[in-house]
Length: 361
Ligand SMILES: O=CC(=O)O
Image (cartoon, rainbow, N blue to C red; front, side):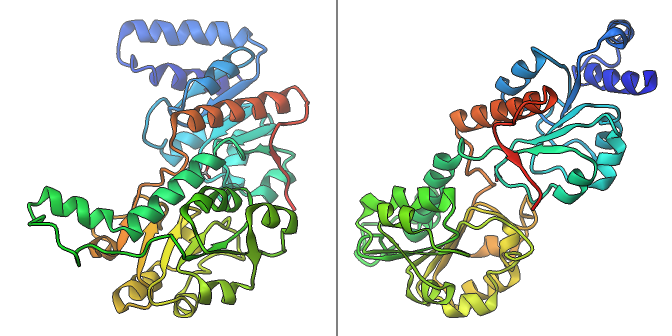
């Protein structure tokens, strides 16, 4: 136990950036002494995150943190979680049996600062009695907003336009130059009509879209009526839509669902937008669809892998806009995600209902 505490606290201080000085040694030792007396639950935070979460956690817990913008190496993570009561993680950390076992039986809760949880093995957590929290709702509008921004950037060819201005290719105003499809009078198809899909539909309403279609495992009649969206089969949505928006969660059922067969079913002019997870797209097929003119353009906030390597063929295409997974990146959303992650953790530690718990199905 003492060894566990020692490694926990050493990391805490090392990440404060004072590891090599004598004073840091003294600090490590004094922290260990104080903390070995501490009865507060221990939480490990896997990254530098907005302060709202860590500040809240520190009111009740002993907090150690990988206080950097780059992910913690897996080995470091495995040793850092030993003996913790709670783990505050991000979508970049794979939460599997190995990690849960490295944490040990003290681990009661994993709070991921994300709405997606495809990186968490829910079954492995359930088997070990570890609760899992996530952060729905607080990022919905930010993600919807970015989905619309990406749709517009892709359809209105902003990447080419910005490059043209910066590279002196502007020339003069030309009637035929950099035209693209507009939203007015268009048909928009939303694949996955959950919180985010619906919020995107609401955001698009003022753009004079002619027809809003959606598809999902089941109809959502009440919400669809309020938004003015119509349910269709996936094939019907693909065939009819000028814009196809991927708003599905990544699950075994949706993995690489956007493959060559689906791209073939879309209009040759269609604009495909993905702000969910890169894993829902078969990326080589997408590249072929874009190059061969099977579809018109693609806007991606998420890719496989992330970061997308700079030599990815997708980046050579004018009709593909890629962003670095920033859909929820507003100050407010990220702050709220951090705080909700902390609230999930504290509730679980206090045996209270968690504000947003994921249950294994
Ligand atoms: O992709 C971001 C999230 O899942 O929150």
